[in-house]
Length: 300
Image 1 (cartoon, one colour):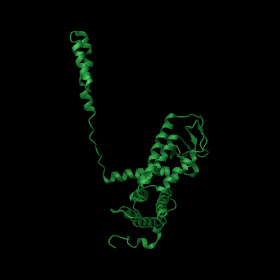
Image 2: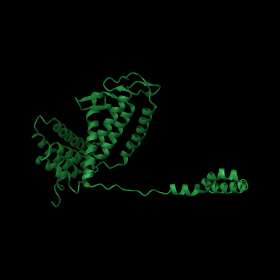
Image 3: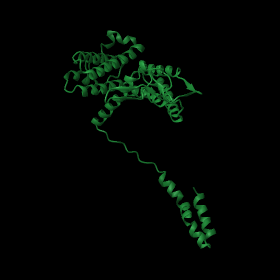
Image 4: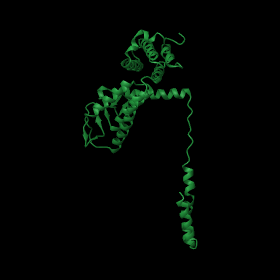
């Protein structure tokens, strides 16, 4: 930055005897003189401000995250060829918009990874969902290698008018790059982390909203709210089994007309089964009774 003030000083020497020219050039000369100071000032590191969240704030945000994943969990299914619908209309009547775009597809693929990070989805579940979506992508019609901007999720036909969107194609490309890195990172991650229980707890808290005051949920909620979550595979397997069994008992007590509550409980049970299957796929010996002889409760 030394050149800027030096050039300003030379301009002053050259224009000093030309009053009119000097006055016209003065704003630029001042800008060149002060440029290094301005650049230094705006380049200073900004102090990081950490937001202050209460426990209730964290719980609220996690419930929102769980409900957001529930959209993908529910609507990105076999019937729609594992493609995300553009939207779901609740009012006046429930309607699923069975069309999708490259942007929607990329967002859905990354939602799988986010759900895994939050404990809402098992590793095998994430891989399976990504695999099914990519399998569908191989059957979509393209124009010179580019996806069209809208497809019917049921028939997989592109929707008219046919066109290519550079914005949507760019969104999908960026999401695929991120997805590629996220999948590579799975190779180096632990097989088991306690985060899966935090994800299950988020689901239980959503169920709690739909069934306030029901003491039957206290069992699973207290187990998942433990300060010290399982750190070993046998302990994790035992807790998963226990939570699933107690929730299954709670399921039998729900009135048939509470459809939304039933759907969430069924989802919770499916999540438990997926995590259990993940553990048993790699560690089938966990089913043996002697594997849990030392992990029933603290102090035993």
